[in-house]
Length: 301
Image 1 (cartoon, rainbow, N blue to C red):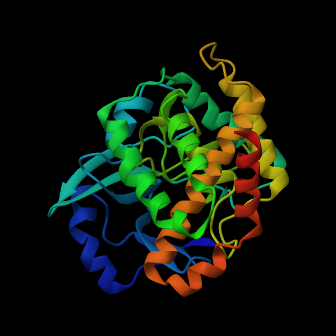
Image 2 (image 1 turned 180 degrees about the vertical axis):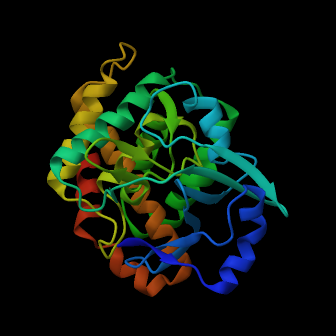
């Protein structure tokens, strides 16, 4: 569960230069964002003054403000507006309106459909032709291939799948990818969907965000949505992408691309698990869902 809790005296002292920089009364009620389900505390603060706003620590070089100005500022996409940005003592912050609603964990089919449409609208707008650039090759080598190589020794018949995944990575359309598109990064209310935290956004193969939202690899199901909601999200997303005449992928191939996305996400999870604790990770390698992905790919390619 996500919530804002009143900050401590020490925390207020820590961020007082930030509050002064954006002309916020130090006597205002200030809260810090926490996620009790994940047991995480974030550098995100709710300022309950005349107008509720949120301060978020960001990245100056390629953070939220860069993505917002480059891709979102002049369009009515389902992303929060950025009101201001500033630097204090080497740290960079953005100020945004407070968002009502809850995150998308456990969302129903109707909301999942709205999320698929919201993401599809952005990604169909920025759709590009396949392009095997040095940047993409570097991304594949460092974010996908190295993890596949760490995992493949535990499975037979991996070479065929790896070759297929690599080929598909470079032959599908590219678009603006969130690259951390988890249900916790989508806020839902009755009026609007808001996709937040575009700090890692970049141009990548279109399918890269899909499984992280629909089939999240968290082993304790703290972040997940139901299979029915996942299906609604994917169908809605596909319909929105087909609005762009350059998206020529049929639905069967789209489902295969979703399987590749799931495969890459699960391999990432397994790779880090093996690196941290091989004995425990080996138990995860027998996960029924991952075997289902493997079987699906083997039968289809």
